[in-house]
Length: 445
Image 1 (tube, one colour):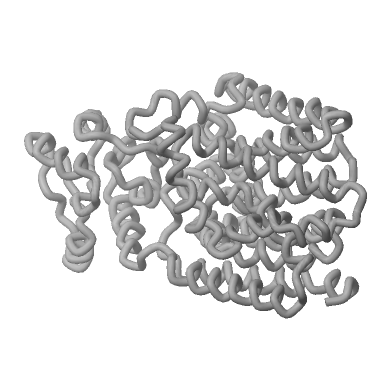
Image 2 (cartoon, one colour; image 1 turned 180 degrees about the vertical axis):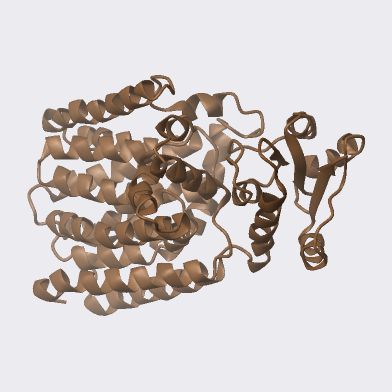
């Protein structure tokens, strides 16, 4: 593909990517469990309740992007979908520019590699925050490649408002070009400080990242911080996140890929991309391995993969990218949230109609609680005693438990609730669907 058509081609990829995200959203029955926390925050911001929104443990960047659309009257789920789909589309332009600047002919392969990541469109459809985060990271990478250190730092600071891994980007460039990239650290730090000040002014404390302290107190992640075990789990999670695209950076180790770099600063900027990927993986290994966490490295993976493929003959390049796109599309389309989880939306709506002012719902089903019009619980799993303690609050009228899940605590808590709760009366069709899904709904006696 000649440079001119590559410049125009990203638009077509962007449109197809948006269409695919929308198609996935149409077959996604409910948002993700973390996603409903973002949606609730967006609702609070749109209502002007910044204290509640900023008091959540999640970073506020993604909900803040959704809030203006919600304030204008758009349904919050559609607002999140619009922000995510557009973020993925708009990330392609800086990605293409950054890749082309590092290795001749790498722009188009990098764009297609990014679009072929199977998990990324699903995260967009399920109201996760990765798409706008990757938009900020793509712009930051492009600015860094151009030597615009102030812009790189500002983009990293904005990315931090969405996901804390944003601060890894200036560190990656610093490792690749310590003599100059240090200039990006100050504006990135100002982004962190600005978030701390905003939280403090809203009465939520001056901690810019309460999620870190929240995770430190969690007792539901037994493998947290087990670096060796997490390292062994990286390949599986990596391939689940990236599919065939996850193998492309390995091609960078091949001699033909290294010889393809004729740009004077190409190796340096690809080293920055490599450091960005390694730092992202290192952070995951210090926490817990989840396939979703690896997607934060998507910009670096696409850059390295694009540079490696740029050295290949056109026939082989097209074959590899075609296989990656087909694989990513099929896996992404077939891996959406199970349709039978739609009962959580129906159940939440029913409970919302039953609640009187001041009453609430407890349990281990965040989506049901949010659909009932209430703040979702903290993003963690509760043991049986913790669930029973939540249910003991006087304001709790209903308890919803996923007794059919693999978590033992969801079954162990039921005997602890017998004295205060009894099976709730539900419409026959709703009761049948809850039973099929293994959902137990209790009402206070």
